[in-house]
Amino acid sequence: MTSQAGETAQSTRMADIPYGPQTKITIERKGQIVLIGINRPTIDNRLDPDATESLARAYYDYDRDPSLRAAVLFGHGDRFSRGVDVDAYKAFAQSGRTLMKGPGFIDPLGRTKPALTKPLIIAVHGDTWNMAHELFLVADIRIASEDTEFGQDENTHGRFPGGGSTVRFPREAGWGNAMRFILTGDHWGASEALRMGTVHDVAPNRDAALAKAVEIANKIAACAPLGIKTSLASSHIALDDSQAALAKLDEQYRALYATRDFQEGRDAQAQKRRPVYEGR
Image (cartoon, rainbow, N blue to C red; front, side, top):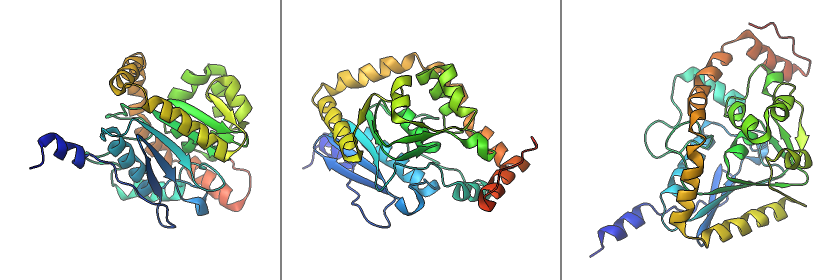
């Protein structure tokens, strides 16, 4: 007869999702750690609602699997991610459906509860723009390849950083550093991110960045798991006052989808011209 504890452990065991051309989010268990990969290279690893929900489900399953002690997020292909699949998200917003509705999800942008209670390490390379940079800022430990180009340029496209950067970027990098890039839309590299403190280690290439993240994850996995979870919980107590701002982001983003400037940003991008914004 299977024990109740055994049934619980079995029911919360995170399953591998092998790499394949139609697999948007891959999962590879490696002992006590798990590698979670974004896999939409044909569209620059941009996340549509389905990929976002798959990532949210992966976070949930990882957090509730007692055999896993650390997770590494990375991107397949030439770049980590250019962020959100804007057209897919716009169509989803207009459909009236709700993303990540019900139990079984942890928002990978960390805007709502429940939140991850276990460590998340991220390894980025190539283009890491907008929503991708916001996924990056959620991670506890961040590794970048030397070729990483970060971007938070939504304001140049009639949008705004609606995934948490307006909260986390100033907190992590300092007000002036964050506003320098959020308000201008200029991009920056790994060395600048290291200077600002948003990157904790820079590796020579993609493979080295991922290897470094796995090395750190294995070191964490060798520590006492309850102590690790308590350390994270204690550290997050000081950040709880940001939750109201994070919770309001979806409402603010939906409002921008309905503006003339948002459509102008999309039109200008499609027509390869400079946008002309009117503030309406």
